[in-house]
Length: 387
Image (cartoon, rainbow, N blue to C red; front, top):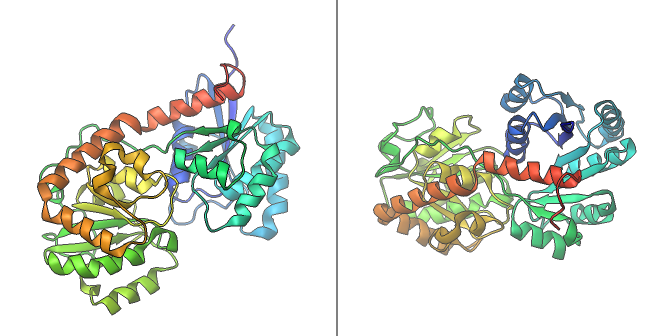
């Protein structure tokens, strides 16, 4: 007799477009429907700006609930609603993503009697020690943790004081276009996407950053380095894709550095994959990470990269990490590495093609989804635990 499907509830803080949110959506939509029954919960209200992820989940017929939590005052009500919905859905496994969903989910899960609670850890949280403290205090309510990289797992044990026997490592994934191949001077192969009036002329070489404009991402370091390499390469523009609270301050810094005419602030975009396919070099000068999705997406577009050597980066790049990484917060090292890539485009192209092959082999969403399915099977005792 066939076993009944394992009921898996995925919980997250919100469903705005981001790395963790994409991961949840891919898992929900790619899981083997013959073996798993999925449902999804978001603490926050339905996204107002970009509903792509919520729409994709709903179109697959997956039950989706928004708890409409807008702040700390709404947490008790959200906790009660989530616990009640768990009792209705009766999940065998609760898999959560991001700090607030992790914390509230493990409480609601235990209130509702969910057999297995799994929390996801996506960054090495170096500057919010209270997050680490709450995770450690409530570790007894968690059966397994999923860390996105070995470096995040090591941090979670040494600094987060989480029990090592509960930790598994499953990387982020990325969509792979099997027909995409980058040629010499990548931006000229696929044409120039419609980047709007803020963009430079289509003839410029493009160095691109993608991410939130927050201190973690080190865009201030990138701008300070750009004051050097933009002078050396007058045919080059810097594109900043993303928005965030630091945008006015960063734009003012570009003015003070005298490079405002060479920086295109593109804001939040839904066509990031197309932008990356037409960029010559991707740069991510983060101060800390977990396993940066923007880096995976850039590699899937065949981009050569220059990135800070922070958590998860070396694991993503593999043998290509030495030539494509610099220490975090090192303006001079970042400037040299970017200038090297721009000065030797043939080598940059070779690195970009190597990056594309690596993510295709190791970080496809189908491969990542299968790793989660094995974890859920293990957690429910259907296959032996690998601790």
